[in-house]
Amino acid sequence: MDALDPLLIKATQAGLPLTPTPYATLAEQIGCTEAEVMARLTAMLDAGIIRRIGVVPNHYRLGYTANGMTVWDVADDRVDELGNAVGQLPFVSHCYRRPRALPDWPYNLFAMVHGHTRAEALAQADIIANLLGQACRARDILYSTRILKKTGLRLVD
Image 1 (cartoon, rainbow, N blue to C red):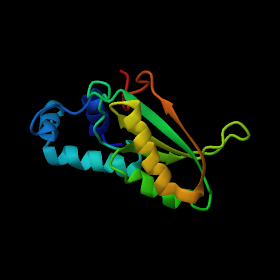
Image 2 (tube, one colour; image 1 turned 90 degrees about the vertical axis):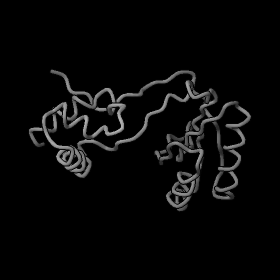
Image 3 (cartoon, rainbow, N blue to C red; image 1 turned 60 degrees about the vertical axis):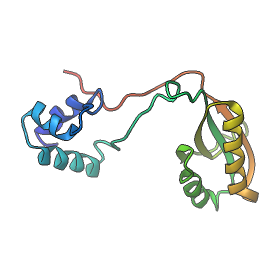
């Protein structure tokens, strides 16, 4: 890590500044240039120190109260291909493969959907089911009841 990295991480722990030029604002806060901020963020992404920079919305505040993790038992020889296709759907916020825990948990593909109603979330799940076709052997949807984690990397003094 570069000497600027801990300063940059601490400056972004609560999110990027809500300004028209957030990277310039960060640069001013930590005493470097906007180009240095961009270079250090890119280097930390490339090194795996940070995974991504992105928006972390509060779906409940946006009116999406039927947030469901759809879970799928997909044929192992198709799960990567189909998971990539599911992850491209505009209503899927994240999609990933996980190992099964047989015999109780046969699901190996997970895709988060967000609806204003459960009917909307179920309709999205039906679209996923149609995309998966015969490769899908079972499915379910697990609805969120609260937000569990909405924070990123934290450094303590």
